Image 1 (cartoon, protein in one colour):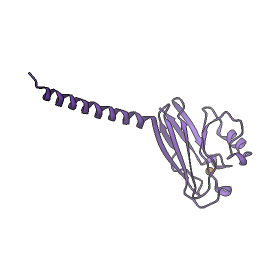
Image 2 (tube, helix red, strand yellow; image 1 turned 60 degrees about the vertical axis):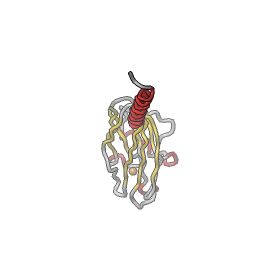
Image 3 (spheres, protein in one colour; image 1 turned 45 degrees about the vertical axis):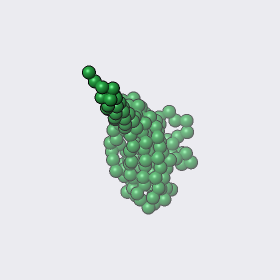
Image 4 (cartoon, helix red, strand yellow; image 1 turned 90 degrees about the horizontal axis):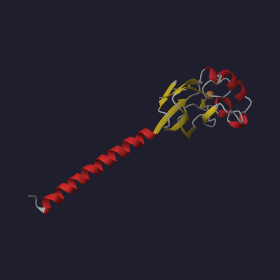
Length: 156
Ligand code: CU
């Protein structure tokens, strides 16, 4: 028969194991809920990645960095996530008229998320929820940039 002391030690051990398992599970879930992405842009009209992968429903914390030196009026960049089926050329042409709105057409329903326009040496961060699974286009909508500055945003 066990002494009360032994029972106590067994209970404490079980509680410790339970605590560790709970903490491990909690941190795993949190890591999956949120994903942080940093994408760089430069004075040569380039993003440093053409593919971004996330999971549906994840909170995406995206930071756009401009590693160049040129001002935003000359070499401004933003990061724009478009809905599926959006024609990049048509969207880009329409966006060019909205310099005062970070080159995002007002009242558009073709933008899932976007950053402001930034210039050399600046950075900006946005947070949004990843849409349903599928492949989406991202672009920079500064006039003329979308021809080179674009990529795929893949939601799994
Ligand atoms: Cu750009």
